[in-house]
Each structure stands twice: as C-alpha cells, then as structure tokens.
Image (cartoon, rainbow, N blue to C red; front, side, top):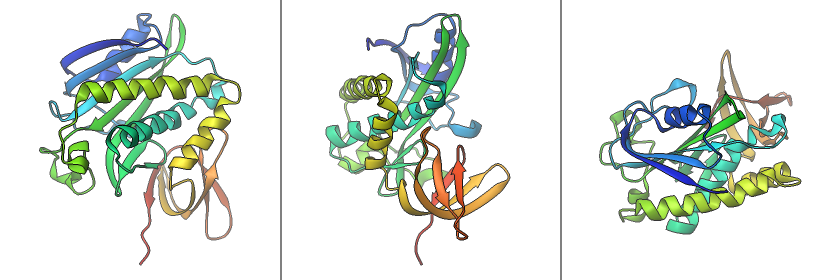
Length: 247
C-alpha cells in the first residue's frame, strides 16, 4: 500500500476530512493526521478528546476488495495494528477490548472508529485511530479510565516514529486481510491478542437490552459471542462491552 500523508495543525475531525477526500476520489492509502481536533468523535456519536499535541489523530482511506460480510473485520484488523505498534515500539503490554479499544492495565490508550461512504470509485472505508500520547489535560470523566504512551513509558513519544511504525503494520495486516483466507487469519490474530475473546465475564449494553455472560469467541464477521447464564449464545454486532470484576 502506498501512503500519502495530509497534515493539519488543527482540524474538526480527521475522519470527516478523510471521508470528504474519499468522496472526491482519493486513492486508498490517503492518511489525514492532525495535532488537534476540535470535533473529534468516537463510536455512537461520542466526543473524542483531542487536545493539541496530546494524541496521534489519524484517519486512512481504504477501498478493500473483500466480501461485504467481512468488512467489520477492518476494525479488528486495525486494533491488531495498534496493539503490535505499541508493543513493538514502546514495549507496552496491551489488550484489545472488543471491538475497537486498546487497553493498558484496563485503561484506554487508543480508540478506533471505522466509517463507510459511497464514492464515485465505489465503497470507501475510513478508519480513524486516536492514540493518547500524553495526558496532562484528561478531563475528570476519563482521567481514571484512560492512559497514554507517556504515562506508560515515562518518556515523551516521537510522533514521527509512531506514525512510521503504525503505517508499516497497517500495510502488513491489511495485506493479510485482503489475501486468500485473510478473514480467518485476522480473526486468529485478533483472538491471540485479546483477553476478551474467550472466558471473559462481561456486561454488554446494546440498544434496548443489557446482557450478562461469558465471551465465547467471535463470529466470521467479528461479532462477539456471549453465553448467558441459561446457556444461550448471544451474537453481539454492536454494543458497549464492560468487563465484570470478580468480587
């Protein structure tokens, strides 16, 4: 994959800019990065805190030639990319929380948001990745549940080193995904890196229901399997998953 980097000091949202670029015909591999976002967003329309120089705010345009049923695996693949980037570059021991968060010691260090749009060149997927570089200005509501590279390493990370490593791993795992049997390989890669894949006691908040159960792996498309107390397997395509601590 060839990467083209568009850099901004301040922008409303790197995902919004990447979506607009895709609609104007941008090729796969276009990356939008910013030092600050004024309207960064996460899943379910939540705000993403994007203070200046406190994070890597990154979005990439993809035009994957894979079966539509496997498109949700792009989020899982992206989580594997970030996991390996942080572990290999900074020696930070990471966990992937289904479906799109990277945790360190049960604190969030990265969030991922994938969005789709129709373009004159066909369907495009925009993957937004926000990695916390440092955390001097975490608002009170997330200060106890978030962390950063600086917090975990006691060193200020070099953004260019992080970007170079992130794009290198992105190219590697994206090539895996679009290859023969790539969906299966990505599911295996994700499962190996996530403690949420199996035997995790969880609470799942979905639109009109709360589910308690134990994780039992993932479906072909990356959906989470949760076994309830009566033995029923619930398939979770979207929702907030929370680890339940033993008492």
